[in-house]
Length: 248
Image (cartoon, rainbow, N blue to C red):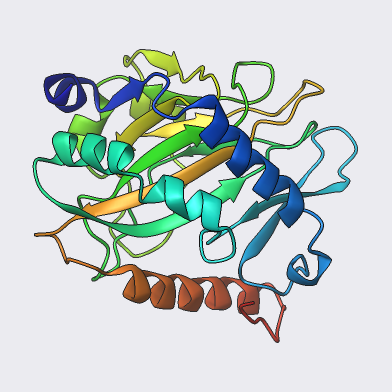
């Protein structure tokens, strides 16, 4: 598996979690949707999408989620998942970031990008495991990766900002649909270009995204990451004229 990860930039581990483990986490994510006190657009924990046809706002994600969802937290720290990521990275790892994306019917997609952000504290070993709570396919907005394109390294300016990549950066690389079943996990690093399309189906595409970094690449930097991330979000929202942002 490690050789395939180094060559292709991603691996898919089928049925990593049992149906019971996934059902418990999925029920927890349903309950979170009822917590309206968390879903204010001024809460740094949440973000919204827009219906690709009507423009209607659609609730999209919690980031982070594991501090308010113990069953999801157990999946992030599960020995099976930790062992898989450690095998790929060749050493011990630490959870650094997590989020829950609902991808409700009608939700827009995400443009082509890489996860690496050139902050001084951002680890180059940043690696994400996408755990499927729902099945994912082309109709409900699965993620697409580009086999081998991670080997080109950072494809944008190292200026500390998020960058949308032009399609020319992945020209000639095979586009692979991460079609997943509940319990599957797809794992890729921070330099893998990826995107997702709109959800044109009547089905949600709930994914848990758990990110880790090597012990030798900063150690436990979760607190630092979210401090930097919230500072980054506040600067963006301030430029958009939004104030009084908080984290709850």
